[in-house]
Image 1 (cartoon, rainbow, N blue to C red):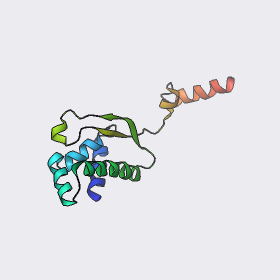
Image 2: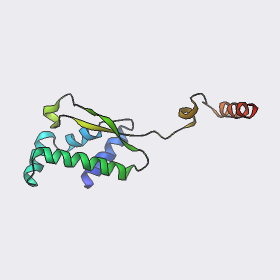
Image 3: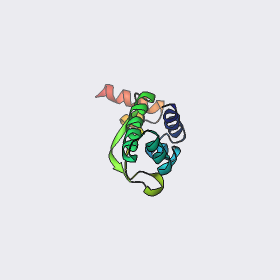
Image 4: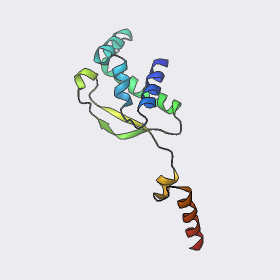
Length: 123
């Protein structure tokens, strides 16, 4: 479990806007060969191991980033599915915390904020 936490944390440290944490975790685990090794070790099918890892990524991601980790509804197929060992996966990302820019789209500075407040008072 600690390995997965480290892989997820390292991915988002290096890719704060990234959505392919699942693919990166599978690569870090050794791709298809690593998945096959885990399947033998735990006496499971490769598909079962892939599902377990996918679920673990969702759970661990939410533990590490409780206010910002989210799963994106669409599934993505990696460019090189044979090498990665997975054929599709759920994307995850860290939500950006709302800022005044994101909320209003027009406030870029303190002066703009004051102007906006004054405008709201006039209305």
